[in-house]
Amino acid sequence: MTDPQTPASPERLRDSLVHTGRHGVPHTPTANPPVYRASTILFESLAQAQRTGPLTTTGERHATTYGTAGTTTTFALMDALCEVEGRGHATRAALVPSGLAAITTALLAFVKPGDHLLMSDSVYGPARTFASGMLARLGVNTTFFAPQASAAELQALVRDNTRVLFLESPGSYTFELHDTPALCAWARERGLVSMIDNTWATPVFARPFDWGVDVSLMALTKYWSGHSDVLMGGIVIREALWPTLWTAMRQLGLCVGGDDAWLILRGLRTADVRMRQHERSALQVAQWLQTRPEVASVLYPALPDHPQHALWKRDFLGASGLFSFELKAGTTPAQVARIVDGRRHFGIGYSWGGYESLIMAAQIGSLRTVSPWQGGPLVRLNIGLEDPVSLIEDLEQGFAAAFAA
Ligand SMILES: *Cc1c(COP(=O)(O)O)cnc(C)c1O
Image (cartoon, protein in one colour):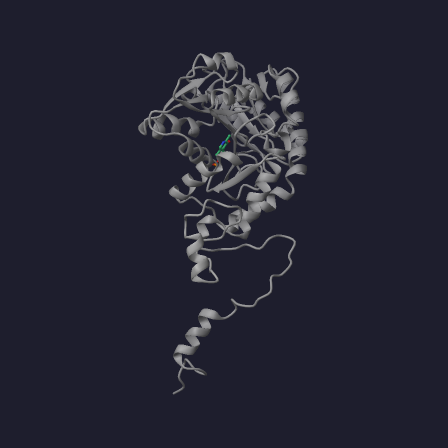
């Protein structure tokens, strides 16, 4: 009987199985960086391995030690984040598995027990839950402030132990803007670290480091990906603060896979054209909604009658495709459901920033403490890349279904 391990000895075939196809294969000059999947990264010598150490590097750019510290694929995305979000400022970038993880990691890195945090009342709900949940458990207290608060109003809330100012502009669901440059200048004077969730605007429509923020956080899950098929968070941070963030990243063991990083890089290539189309279509749908008798207001900063339109014009380069509209007081939950349900083009789903339109009723009752929502029921739209005329027809049918006599 033939030995199944022939032609070489059993040992030799096993050697081949381990080594074959790995060495001396030239790097193909593809347009896109290759996907690296890695835990182990090989060193040339023991001396080189001992010089770097598995997880003890100070986070020098592109230092390869172990998969969790990054590979060519994740370094390519980190460089892209610094270039397009950092916009000429000296920044570093970190990647984490979700947008929420970007928020929680950045906060954890910069607070310790006994510290105090100032957070906008209009932030993404889970950011708020993290502050009043885990951070409170760790002995960090949070004071929420009305999103339109001025630096003078923050001055009345700040304490000696305040460490971080946390912003999101425009705010989730209600789209209030901060006077971000004024608040960041104030934070810098007080020695606070300023952080902003810049998921809505993306680098196409905002340059947060020009506003003076220290840390820009984004759910790459949304517009950077653009295709609703990958979860990732990005943290872009001023270089001087990088060692603090990097230390937290290493201690928490946070990293992302090469396949996911590659998907975000691919989405990024078309971000500018997508964002401009989202803006054009969103404006068209928003303007139509303003003509509807069922609608009390449309919460979209690009509309001239948004209460902070002037601030938006001063600070932003455009508006993305996510906004809310307020139905007239007295609209019933059943009527809201008939607007939302059964749309041809609008899916019902959380998240946003993808190519496909989404509709969702907002439940912000418990989400606000210092600036409760006083208006009618809110519906949030993610305007995708469909023809805006089709989207308007779709909503028109929803209104007809909801308000049929
Ligand atoms: C969705 C979202 C996040 C979180 O992103 P995930 O990747 O879904 O965790 C953070 N901030 C804002 C404003 C968001 O809308």
